[in-house]
Length: 244
Image (tube, rainbow, N blue to C red; front, side, top):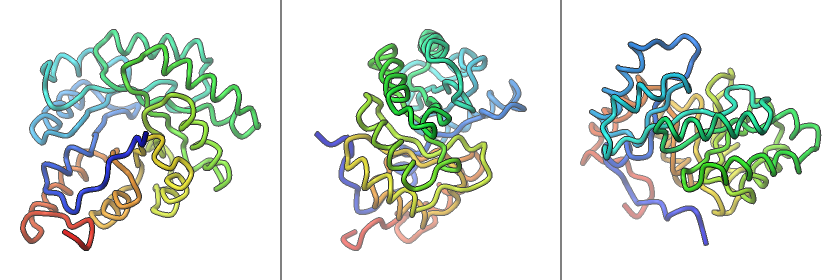
């Protein structure tokens, strides 16, 4: 059964917001930033807002239970080099603190060492520990060549995660349409795709949705601006296919 729904022909600003999660997960983000994040996320009805683990309880308190916006947090972030047992403890603690979805950094060093069994078992263990809370696995494209992207994507697709995610946003290069195409051809609908890192324009979103991306991680200021741009389009809709 495919993990990916068919792409719509077009979307308005509200439908676009339902594909975007925003975050405050840099080391310098403060309590004030988390409060602003919650306000912007709920006012614009972004699908999720993410904070670093120690701020997740605060974020949970600021976003009402039952709100459209979900609360999320990162696991093994941003290096991915934590021991599996540490990732499990962190993930289950985040769920206990009210997180409704988690983004976990893959152990890239193990992947690049060829230890795919370790990587697969770790993802499966964390996914099982937090089920039914969805797990997104960050493969950090910046560190991978094309073959490693295929290998990482295949592991995620077969290991019980809900999404393969392209990056943390902590690396200098942006996620490209070409890299998304590699991921999409590899996973073939078995797992959803989240594009994150350097996504700045509606045209990029249009192309990526056409390839099967169903979630975007976009910085807060850019995300709000993209909603405004979408609303200003003819008919207030972003055309995604020629049949719209």
